[in-house]
Length: 386
Picture (cartoon, rainbow, N blue to C red):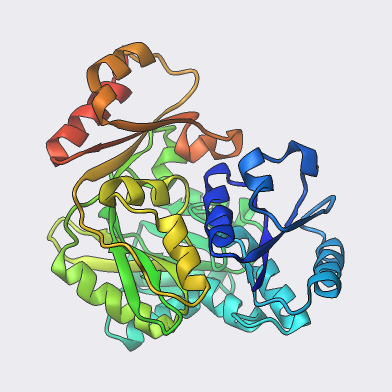
């Protein structure tokens, strides 16, 4: 089997997806911008071939790379990246080279908040009211109906990028002044704690692995308030969350891929479905899944891509958490103190790529413990300011 993998070197932990494919005997054909000699050795060992382009955003270059692989290796079975940013690039290659998987229109529907909302409603999932901001009147009418605040975000977008919390007339003016030239989707602003229903479906669309993360803060607040990110993988998925999540996953008709379904848990305990991301959860979430369950989700994804099932038994033995810190802040405890206090619970320590710093911080402690109170203790200790 030949698989084209886009950006196999970034983010760095996603190299494990490539290694998982290679472990299955799959020919992984990488396309990225870095010189081959600069690639990590464990990635080089896992690539059957590599084509460097000057810019992954330049479709003509990527097209020529894929054409070369088709000429040299023959039929391409899949195009992958596990990265929401490159999903449309994947789709264009599938369409132009007749490769199985989601094509351009499929991917547009999977990424548009407005289309997600229709699918959620079709299975009775609770959602906040929302509408495409066609013009100033549409936004004004929506605010008149629902009142302040409302939240506007790109109809197709990644994470909290480009989001606007609109709480008054000045915010409305600022929105029209600064919003990028793309379709925006406005929703009622819902107060609640972010939680997710994540997992993997096999080639028949059946869910074979589930997980759930809970956030201590929102992506929007992390940027707006320069907060420190912390979230954890839950040992127990609430029954209502799983029931709604399974209905939504079925509605999206996914095959051999990840799902990352975001909810808000309101103060009264009820849930609101926010959006579905049909790719691996970002950052080090997959690593946290591994630490929580003592499995290798990178490899299990590769197993499903190659037509097999989830092979390892899993049980949620631990809570696992991402606890970040940012440069320029005066923290009470240095790294030596942190390792001295919690070394047996720190599964990994990471210096994050600068591009992630605004949301995910500059350094992260990936920890695990059997009790949630132990996780909260580590969050408090690691992020405490002097």
